[in-house]
Length: 438
Ligand code: SF4
Ligand code: SF4
Image 1: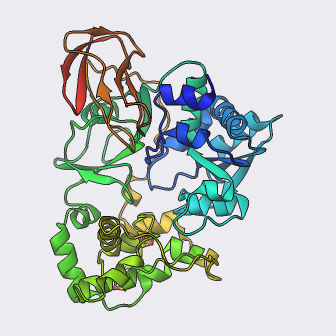
Image 2: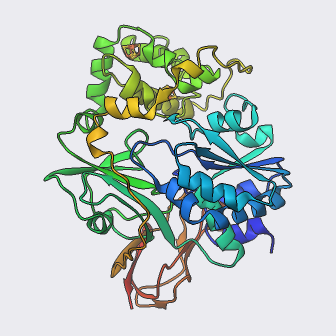
């Protein structure tokens, strides 16, 4: 069985949040494989911890991926400030053709378009993917999972950081399906009466107050904040209210565009133009929507750039949804030329954290060996991009650790789900499987 098939069977998906099934990338041909350790969401340290503690497995997975796609170059993108991770990965790279590429401490650094350009000097064509410039990019934890898959071990656990308003910020590896509530308890419990969770980070993550949501293959971290936190209040504003404020208050100052990392990299993203689709309603909306097509949803325009505290990122989200609904493909310029002011307009993480009122929550969240052993777990059958899995077990059945629980039909994009520990199947629905530890 080749590596792509092993990785497919093991259910490996993008562990950085994207959740794209990894076997698809490994079935392609490329000259460069890049490990994305650029982690830039404030307060999250999961990737730094993975690189520091599992550097050997990560580099091994990267080398296996290089062999699978025929690459001669392997690059690990790491922020220079993460000294321990840099040392561990540098040591693991010794004697291999993999090299470390150091990155500055700015946001966003983990965007694939940005990382590919930083690491190789190549610019992905508008609307394209790294493969079009000969590169395969995966999160660092994904490479650890590739190495495990090659040894016959499926993805059953997830490493994530728990930070923000908790007593002991920490990075943990927990069984998939563990509730966020149990993860918060493992971090010493929350310190605020009405907690709101930013799953995946404050900039690009999802905001929820449902503590019983399960950890899935793309959960890279959780930031807990009080409901009264200014950024949480902004994020929880209903879309109709966000749009109404944008329609009345956007003065077309262009700050959102001038600080947009994709615009600065040379792509035709201009959120101030997208905001016009709110101001002028239907007239011209089609054309303004196109200015959102290349937006990577980094959130910088909404949470950092806009002096009026409007919602250009959310306007871009709506525009992209409209473009998708209309089946519109990119028809704008195909040349990409980085802006001459790009380097000077990078947003330092510290400045971002200050703007987000996060400095009070800035504490280390070191990797802990603490075991989180939930008695009952809920495993969604869809934990990745693509189609949901179909249950392969029935209620009452006893399953072993690593056993296949849900699979995707042949020739369908998606990823199978496996049991993290020996258990009894409690419940099976079209959406999830519930296990109770034996
Ligand atoms: S920064 Fe804010 S006010 Fe200025 S153009 Fe963008 S959305 Fe409008
Ligand atoms: S979210 Fe805003 S800043 Fe980020 S890429 Fe999209 S338009 Fe640019």
